[in-house]
Length: 93
Image (cartoon, rainbow, N blue to C red; front, side, top):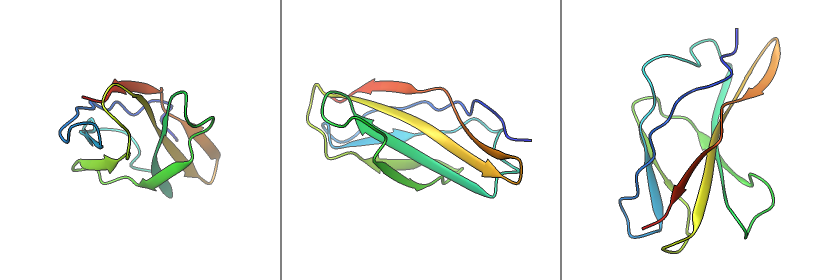
């Protein structure tokens, strides 16, 4: 079963260029594809960027600027279909 929400805790470690992501300990274990997706609000109309989820935590290089808002979500896919987590927002510092 695909979980509809995989919690993340974004922080901004790199003066607006990257977001550090920590995942909850549960969720996504049965996904065949587990991708982190993001977009810069007001610049990109869709989640154009994606990378494979690293469950231990990862950094997404957004190439954004300080003050911009980044939206992040996780896309999970298995034999029953595709679903997305809740969208999380973080303002780059």
